Image (cartoon, rainbow, N blue to C red; front, side, top):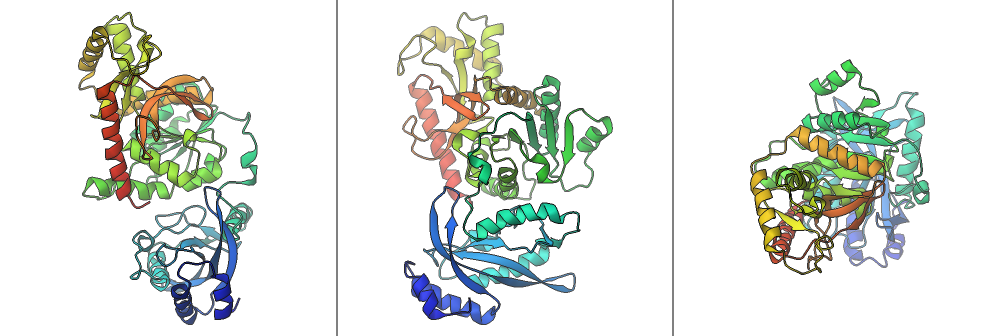
Length: 476
């Protein structure tokens, strides 16, 4: 519609800061007269809905000496200007989306300006100006060839539903059961760990098809080139996320190799990397289980859950699965213990803060009982033997292949994997730590609670607090 203050006041009657919002919209209309306003229902990822003001138009972008008008759609939240707007590209049928650092596969726009939004310094005019600047560095749209236009129409339909306020991040087929079909695995990342996963999964022959998404900047990378040369059966290499469509399991092995200095900057760099990956995977494989091997695994599992909109049961970190398997092997084969080794677990936070625990229902004790002296000695001896045994890519790859077997074949086996801990052990924050879990084709089916030894509970709570503290500092 043409700009009408009277109409806007009516539409924005439920906005908390209506007058501030209208004054800013007036300024936008003066500088960008091509913008058109409307009121529509926006559906968030959790399924909740709100009637929100949105506007469509174009921002000018200078690229290689030419001026391009980039079509956009911006939604204004009812808590604006204290909350940043939600921004999307609005491509025409003959435009394709260039997924990159600032744009995901659905056309959602992510900019530093949005992440650092703070009233009154941050305004939509400034946001539009930053779009022009950032899109000059990396043009977000390109002209489609005629052969690409059919595929683009499906994506445009998806984006249109978002812009029209009819989509909550799931397709119309979300309610349908994902029965049968190929046991398809997609591995994101073709580094050492990604290649180790491919070889281990292929060796175990647990998947009908393995797609490798090569996220490297190099045109031809050594590992994927060798995969192409020696032509592994059932393995496909791609850089197009559509190749991952209908995967039952998606394994993420990528880590950012940026120039970050602090640990927080390193993790934030990984968050930005995942921002360009997870929404694409969630779109093409809406019923999949996400298995996170990227580091730090607890944080990146949380990030994957937040960005995907998947249920927590379908977002899993590799956690302490390898540590637990080694721990059980030592007890069973090296120490020759009479105890059932499968009842001994390494849980908690991957790394130095992990802790050994016993399953409460396996030692014929009640939850809250203490370990016997023999059990404590056995735990100490096994832990001592395992000291200094690092996790090389090939060993982690074998562990991931084991998890893949359990999930794809719905084996209902117990593994120590990173899962949600809120509500357990007096942990009230949304954190993921490793616990013994029954796994199947739908992810985590049930969590098995180990004995509540004082030192175990204390370490879990300490890890949860540390992980949550770092999560709160991230810009998600």
